Length: 149
Length: 133
Figure 1: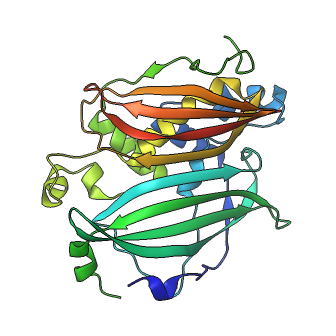
Figure 2 (figure 1 turned 180 degrees about the vertical axis):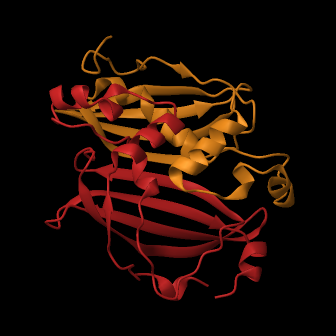
């Protein structure tokens, strides 16, 4: 049902790696390390700055893909990957967008399951790719039936 | 603190055991991440979804697991981090985080990573490719 969406891109959205958001996120994963939150530690580090935890891009806004709707409920997060060119620096800005990478269905124990692969990207303001991430979302037959789009 | 560079293939980074998962942990993660799917915070919604109770965000566990590497930020960084979510994490579960060095290729270190619950079940499993400077 998402097959016709493969290849679609969202509009790019400018996101900032905000100091407060990094602190809140680091605290939520129980990792209030000085390299994330202490300015002095950041300044004296090889990055000359604080950095963000590797799963931080979860919070970014990746824009809207026109005509593409996912429900909030009933989805199962199956797999997740991140790839980095370098760690994200606190205070920097990135252009973020998302792509429908793939959709396929497989027969499983609970009927035919749908697998949706979304790929997210973050580029610096010069257009250089800093990170990408991909999420595989499992959608059960029951959920697909009630999806309206 | 030892360094990642000293680690031999087959050895693990210092294992971390988390405190029992609390509702507040998940409420905080929902707020910090913007993932407000109610099956992670509200009992009735979890039950409606056919679950015995609220479950942790997979990304909460994945986020926690990465802290095995945080102390080594001057040595390198996580270049690739890939995870498969294998099982659910419930309230009061005690999760143990582990990273074992599998392979060294020049400046790339390949770790097998996992999170295990108190019953010995692996709830999350994957790989970290750590790039040394």
